[in-house]
Length: 101
Image: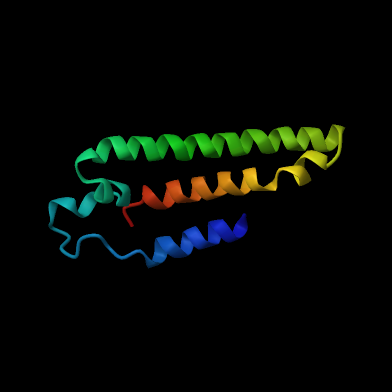
């Protein structure tokens, strides 16, 4: 999971500015708005909703896992690692895509 967050940070740092001219009208667009073109506001809303949902579900599941860890052990955590990895991936991608820089 830390590798996904680290990779997201590196992509965010390496992603070039979308517009070289800071006076251009598109200079203030987020990355997802620049990629989506005509459906910019809808795409941004969808990415924000998915990222927030994934983050909320990730937090909820880990709280639930902590509770289960105290009560029943680590069996559930060991049994479903890919779900958590996917939630971290979607959260990180959502953060990277909604950044202007």
